[in-house]
Every structure is written in C-alpha cells, then in structure tokens.
Length: 322
Image 1 (tube, rainbow, N blue to C red):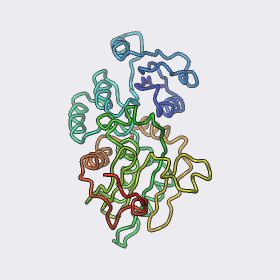
Image 2 (cartoon, helix red, strand yellow):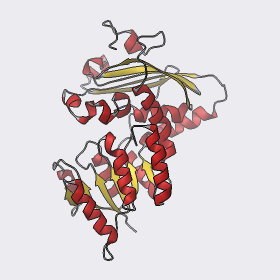
Image 3 (cartoon, rainbow, N blue to C red):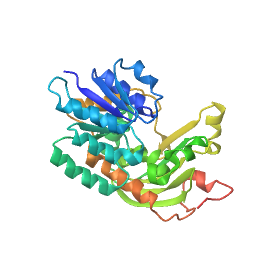
C-alpha cells in the first residue's frame, strides 16, 4: 500500500532527488512547505500537493490529517531544510507520529543525536538519514574488497573535492557557520562518512587550513591515512576540469589509484528510500561518526601547512589562509 509523505524544504537544491525517490517508490506526496514559492518542480512529480509557505499552516494541516478519521495520516516526512533546522524538523516529524527521512548532515552537533535517540524511543517512530554513497554499487564492491584484505597496513588516501560556487554562497545560509556548520559539514560530511565506512573509526584529525572558501587537513583512520581538501573556489579547479568546462572536480585515490565512482549517482536517493521502506535504512548511530568528525573539524585549531598536508596546500605559492 502506498505511503503518504510530506516534505520540508521543497524549494531547495536537494529536494528534487527526494521528490523523485518518493514517486519512484510508488508513494504519495501529500503536503510540502518552503518559505520560497519557487516550487513549480512539484508538478513534474505530483499533481495534487498541498503547498505552504508558512510552517505554522503546514503544521496545522499535518495535525488535521493525523487526527482525521477520513484521511490517511502522514507516515513519513522528508527533511530538506537548511542544516541548522534539521534537528527541529526531525523533532516535528516524531511529534506528528511520522518517521523522519533527513538529508545530511542529520544534525550539526553530536549531542543532538543523543537527544533525538531519546525522542525516538519515546515516540516509537524512526529517524533515518540519507547516506547515499553507501549504496553506490562501485563503493559497496570497494568496501568488500578492502575488508577482505588482511595485510594490516594502512592505506594512503587522498580526497579532493572542488565544487565552485559564486558569491551567492557566502550570502546564503550555506555561508554562515552557525547555520551550515561550515564547508566541512555542508559539502564534505558525506565524503567523511564514506571514508569512515571504508576505513574504520577516526584515531586522529588535524586541520591545516580553514577559511570561507576552503578547508583541508589530515585524518588517521583505523585502516588509512587520509589527506583531504575541500574548496568552493573555482581557481582551485585543476586544468583538466577547466578544459572540459566542468565546475566540479572530485577525486579519491587509494595508494595512488583513482577510485572510479563518477557514474551511478542518478537514483541513489531512490535506493535509500526503497531500503527504508523495506525495513532497512541508515539511522542515528550510522550518522554519529561523521557528525562527530565534522564538529571536531569546525572547532579545531588551524595548524597551518604540514609535511603531510594535501598536495593542493603544499603547492599553493601564496601560502595558506588561517
């Protein structure tokens, strides 16, 4: 039987992936809310969605459905709102007796997970997060290969992610540390989750550079040493990306070999949704390690360039911003 969904933050960047996932899993979107009314994309997926620009009216509508004897209540609420609102919107979902499917980062601070765990137990509802790289077929195969290795040595890993953004980024909530959690949280949390999933828990973390447009450092994981660099500065794009007119460059190497996972991203949210509907899904404890890591990066001392710094920091002639 089809489930009834509502969505918070339907006007945002990631919402279309959730709309597609709800439709592709043969479920219904009943209600949506966003302070922006630029949500014509709804018509591409569903024909009769109640839309609200005021959360209070959305709240009242969801409550009416919950108490109605004639209408099916909302069973899932998909949360695509700005990062700093995730915690509150997950709580809202539980209060109206719905399960929450929340975009990453699930929350900004580790202690928020503890509080949500208590509410999850009290309500009897579930909180899920979207860790879509964990369902990528190539990355699943890579993890199996890595776990099968018994050498005991640590791999050398290099993560580089440059996704150029214009001046709007700093003006929006994404450029505000207290709302987005900073670059490591907003554009890097899913990569950090991937690295921990592949190579085990964090043993040590250093931050070598951190400013409004770039952040980088090193990690010691159970089975890997990682140099990482994240940037929204288009000047950091390598020549190969510039020549091809690509605004984004993503690279993960393990012991000098590139991990190829550029394809297969189209339907990963749908896979996550189907897993949840089948009784699986990623929950609070799955999200905890990466939330703890990005929180520590956000609050770390900036050490400056080190011998083991990422090559993009080592090669920067103008030095490192601190």
